[in-house]
Length: 434
Ligand SMILES: Cc1ncc(COP(=O)(O)O)c(C=O)c1O
Image (cartoon, rainbow, N blue to C red; front, side, top):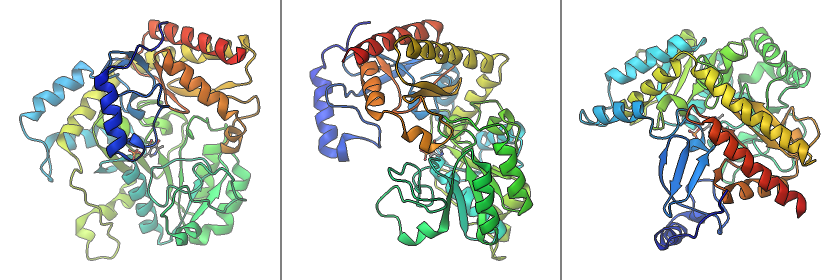
């Protein structure tokens, strides 16, 4: 596979401008070393192209929303047709209502839905909903679980030096110290320790939030059912963060895939079809707190957002869901993912690299350790230098992925998988010779 071509003057200038105006020259945490940095010009199907004309097979997929691939014709047509009718109205519109119905019909726990714009907002308001219902303040989350970038979420998501459970370690500057006491941390996949923390703190625990498939770590058999049982026993709302898993692991999300139904769930990414849209969904009695009729009752959740239920995003989301609902779509997604998953596993073995592929077929990555990867501490044991090297070797060979995730799309083909595995093989060869 050809190596990266020379960077055009136009792209070089844009990269310099980005450094001049954007802190760190980036839009968030995703950035690449100077020699491989690029600016996207366009995306089409499973590929993105940079300003210099280099093509990448894309496993970043906009951090997950683009499950149909970029610029899917059905989504483009739906959005283009809608744009003539306006952009946003801050009040009821047909696409938002249709999308509400589609999500509530698909997702087992979803009796009612409140739209917002980002996954962070969805988890933030899901937590507020749980606290409103229980009238208790603390929340429990899992070490290594990521729920966005608000103050409650950024606790022990990626601690370099984890503390003893259930103490939280803030992941960001600027978070009020007082919040550290409001968040209890438990180990994912360890039901005994988690249950003990819940039993000890149930009188002050307003909700439990979990990524049912944490980053790329699958739940052990019995973990999610056990979590459901213990939260139910103490009447503590269980929140599934389905921002990543929603409409990805299955039409009904992780709750359908793993067969455990929470009280509330947060959705984002896929439901907006690549546009800003997210949602809190859940039990009607809990969701009723969003009803403005409750405003005087004291049990009312104040949640308003300029773009709540934005019609353009809703149209894109609806077109995406319609395509996903077609017969055989998930079968295809899983089988393309499985081919790459298995190919990677084979190559790790062939090159004798200590590592394993962790995840489900629509979303996984290589974790460079031979030890068990059932929780965040398992991931922490990996050789991070090997991972960094892997990502950058792949990028120079035209394979774009997240720092620790590979998202599959319906647009990825068997040829994409073959080319990717060829690039992985070259990368492993270079990495093992060094
Ligand atoms: C599981 C999970 N929850 C919440 C979020 C936050 O979503 P957003 O980036 O839209 O705020 C993310 C983002 O990647 C996520 O992976």
